[in-house]
Length: 380
Image: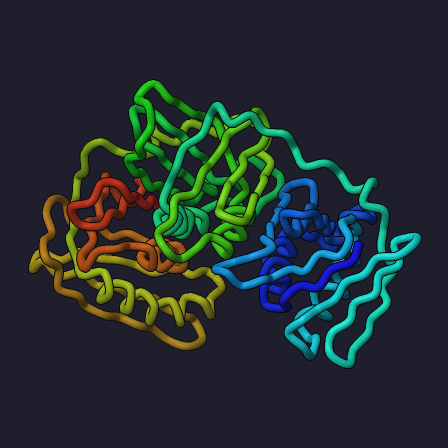
């Protein structure tokens, strides 16, 4: 293999695929990045068996010659060094030449680097995915849905299925659900698909979705999502992102969400978040994160927290409306702040069905996003 390539294009592709490389891999060749060069361009591949990312660099882009191919070929180069060295090379043109036994020379400006390459034949083949079950979704909407749900996945590997975000599709609607037994986040959106199309029990790791989110284009481009038996493929213009579907059956969380409320509260999102954030400073010191909310007859609420060593924070907030039974509720302030951060409206609606029942938070007049937090039982 012998070619020259523009540094900015090669570096961008490397940054994308390197997100799939794990430092803990037990398969030595997976610690490398596979490079395939042919007459159409260069394809870079990286994988940790759970996720695989391919990035394609075309020969030309917008009439700019990106690659000058002298000889086709393939090689696997050690990612730890390859990622860093390409970023730090001095010139805009990079020459890569692979000789016998995959000995690779990289030249740029006055720099010349020798790398010991590996046999690309030993690199695992990308999974073949039939494209008969697929949807399209705008990249910015997909990013938003990941942001609004993935933070609520479990970090406990003892229940692997809960470390993922559940994808369901029915009646032309795509829904994401994440739950860690203490809180739940869900977001629903209408998608342009056949009403007959349905999907259930597809759970994708929250960590993986956050990595995907980093390489989704910002501009509003359509992403193809292809579902296979145990894999999902996200197709972007020059990137293929494969991920494994988590094993197991996701629990039915629908029963957690009440159909009616005993107490309902509408309050300014930022005001509530700021008050809880201040109270969180003290509750954090106690290692409990517990903040109390007390409702008053004059339609105000009191947010408070205390620390046995530092003292107490108390703050009164005016609500837009407060109806039903007045309650005293204790909750995890960090969970509440996480939920409030992803709300996309000036006011939020909070529903209660009792002091020890789930707290339901929604953007005011928007039923497509829902956050649920379980309260704490406290004395006093």
